[in-house]
Length: 326
Image (cartoon, rainbow, N blue to C red):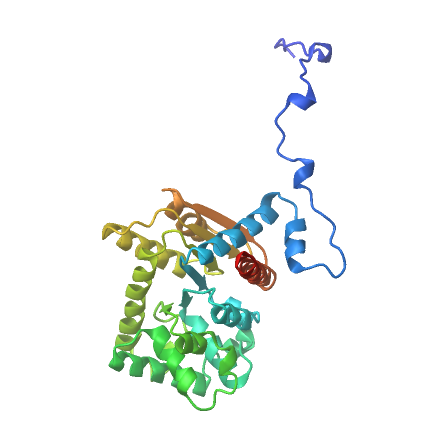
């Protein structure tokens, strides 16, 4: 080799004392082994104070703090949350006063209604698509399209229209586990944000484009009012990769443009992988003025029960502290 390279002599390496160095991992942050029979609260406290475990605890604490201060807890989710069996947990959180508002995509209506009606949902898409039967379930589409048209005529948003239809309708044996029916019963705002052509009932002759657009647009206006009051609160986005992050960002922009102070709040995005729109439109951009964005990566059927159980524990602990001060 013609080029003369620098000399490397490890005997001349400069060192420093390890005890004087800043370290990101400390013994105090290590996990604590779980004891058989111990509470779920102690399990959470025993998680390592590092990375995802610390973020999970921070998300729970932010939501519990918002509840104590009577701030909003907004929950947004795609249909997958319902499809993996988590609707009863959302219903329980609503019953406990841990949900101030809900936002969903259009497919959430399909699976919530079918589970309330039949106790089952989610067809096998691939073979149904091959034979031309995908999305052609008669009752599902007739009920949804009918509820949306009736809601349009009554001046309702889509979430309230479908929720009322399930709550007040006949043949819904399992309405007690319906997110939409529970929201209607408890008068909790639920907004549904559709993209025309994405949901199975849009293919049927009973679908009315004007009704779909008008009821979903009313829900956008409702969401903007909720977001305008989000200061000090928490927004969860669970599994919506495109629709809800985009809708939330526009609702926030509208609220701020109209002079509402929405700066210090927490956003929590939960999904299987880190994706662009939730990362920037939920976690990063909205919280630049003083809030905090948290990203939790993992399966909904594991993460959501952990968050819900942590909130239930925190609510119970807060009640015990209040009783103790009397």
